[in-house]
Length: 422
Ligand SMILES: Cc1cc2nc3c(=O)[nH]c(=O)nc-3n(C[C@H](O)[C@H](O)[C@H](O)COP(=O)(O)O)c2cc1C
Image (cartoon, rainbow, N blue to C red):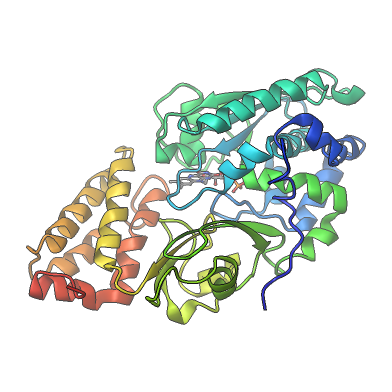
């Protein structure tokens, strides 16, 4: 039975001129902000904490807890809107920015008010040309209507927001690399701790949130934490944008409650497999999350259940593969991406990713040797836990998970110098 669900995040998507401020206001936009400005920052933080909202940027960290980590008081603080969206397979933030930028702006102003920050930045992937245009126009209009600037809506609260374009490096989506890039430095990660909420942009406490996370904030303020908790599962509450790509009939963004079964998302919402070939495998949360198989199709798509199945919910980017897909080539293709995107700062990631690609290239090229599979595992073992940022642990997932579920395909390549399907 498919889930009947009233859209929350995508409520304005498809409405003509949904990106325009008049349309947003006409449809109830900025009422949550008016309500929030009458609440105290602590009340707001408590409401978001009680809602159970978890970050939608990949890690699923509780948003209210992060707000609570920001020091109180009048010191300089910042808010950053992470619009880098670099994880392959992910295209949800772009939808929101292009079609409903004011929902994100409203969420950002509320978050800034809750942590008493007066300066916020959009960090957006440089290739998102339309998104950049929409952000700039929406911010201009929000200033004109008194939602941004000095003494917003007569509340005494000041907040400025501007757009910074990145240059398309995957690592700049990682929050500390994003902060370095925003400061005009090379986009390389910083060591954590300290976390950005303690020492972030220009050394000041900084709240970094994903676009989708912030878009959830106005509905929470409007309709309350209990309402939000009634959607999804106990520990993964609220709606989620799932981006489905690959060998399905209807690729695209689907807004559904967290915990919707993977099978339902693929076979009902995305229309099932595209042709006569059956399902073979799925990457459930973006390219850096481990591959799952048909035995995992009944997994509820929430943070805990996907973890229990041996993968991660990540960004909710579901990449579906049909029978006949060469899983060694899948690993090779994704690994090439990570090699290209390694910032090069630490050796295990820089050298390890290129050694993994060289070994995969050899295997796929029909020159695989006995011991190459063990070599792949050995290299992964040297990367895991030994890199400066979480990208190292993530980049080995495609290799290790395809080895776990489809080892026979690797063995066939090494033994017969060709894919199992050829
Ligand atoms: C290699 C790497 C790339 C990342 N890319 C993104 C990204 O493109 N967008 C994003 O929102 N978060 C990304 N993240 C997660 C951020 O570091 C951070 O956790 C997130 O912006 C926090 O927002 P949230 O709490 O709202 O999820 C990335 C993390 C890593 C390790």
